[in-house]
Image 1 (cartoon, one colour):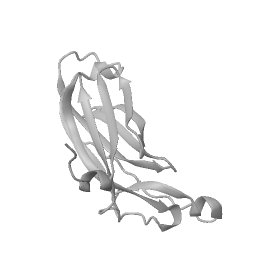
Image 2 (cartoon, one colour):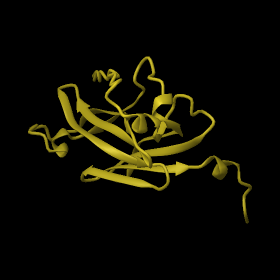
Image 3 (tube, one colour):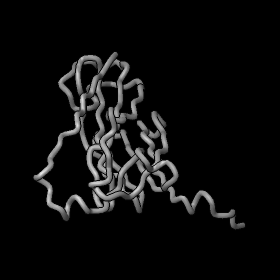
Length: 162
């Protein structure tokens, strides 16, 4: 099964105001390697189907350089396509693919694009707002939960308190 997501950076030079270009926003990966992190957990009916942690940092919009290729966190699991509200008649579990990517950057959050698909097509394409300062939860399909939570650099280096 192959799902190809083509995301091409679009230049909007001249359209964005100077204030917007100078706005400090949250961003993932790139030059954030030694900064804070977000933990991402995707569960289906309480069972983990994907978990990851990735670096996040604050940058001015104008300082964020486009990556040569859009970074996509991809994973596979077994599920019933009909559960996603599609018109599929299939009631048997089949291989599904999930993809998560940075869709947008805000002052207090990173907008994560989230899609789920079979080899027949996309079942769900949505957005998860991953707050940089607090846990975030999305459940667009009953039982399919996306959770993100921040892990501060200071949390990782603080001595254990007992």
